[in-house]
Length: 365
Image 1 (tube, helix red, strand yellow):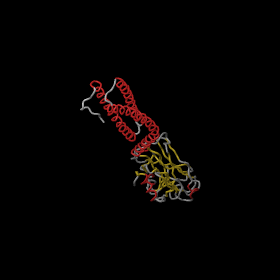
Image 2 (image 1 turned 180 degrees about the horizontal axis):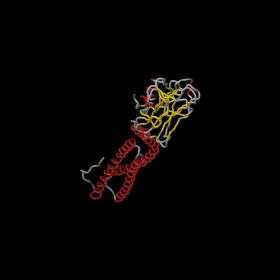
Image 3 (image 1 turned 30 degrees about the vertical axis):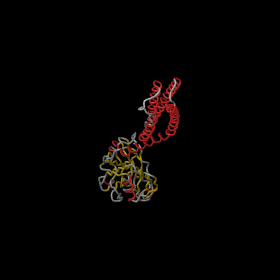
Image 4 (image 1 turned 135 degrees about the horizontal axis):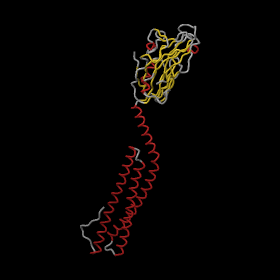
């Protein structure tokens, strides 16, 4: 007798279908099953796991009569044997209740719900049946059923009841599952048939999400959130970057104009006056200002990229590296221009001092 069964929800669904259950709805990871008689629906998330626990010992109460005995062994079968083994009421005119202990759960993770199943039949319309769970000292019963009225004389039927939280208070924990008792409570009218209400099967299913699946889901959720955040910020950042690139381009264009102007004058003019040198010095100051502005803009773009995308993982990394590579090229161009300006200054100084320059000093590209 397998009193504890651990299954993934995919394995669980396959087993239920092999037992005659039908799929009534399916979308993505979500599945809805119905037992052969179609009396209720069982919702399943195929990413979760299920642990089925069956009675393995007598619990705190033993009030029903059994055939044969002991009581818990008459309701613990994996596949219901109906009239072969069961517990039943006596014609006492009172409620009679059994509770059964369960094996400790072997699962780990977040418990989503606990579902109680109990299979009963009756030979009298006055009979009533209720499923029972006991968590700590709290006894909780389902709404009473009348299987005779609902399904007929001596017709076996399985009822179920789901609890998303512990009736004793708070969320379900594995400690609470390990201490859980389940059972059946049945009523029989006084003076009736000695055997009226019967129960042949009682068990619970623990529906839970394993830690591995939970962590994986949380990781995907965080990644998805960061990606969406990056996508929302990207147009604004690109717009700012675009405006700053235009500003750098204008500065570089003016720098190139200054360099080209003085390079042409150096090549075409045989001598420079003090006025020429003064104009050149003014242009040099403008060059320095423009260069500093370009560097500051590049730095601000890099800083902005780091702040805007600091939490966007791989996307940030690729965007920042691409920006650094692009503006690194601009800095190299500016550095080359500086060296060209210094070369021009040296040549102008030589011309002013001696009227000519030495042939080993060449213009740099």
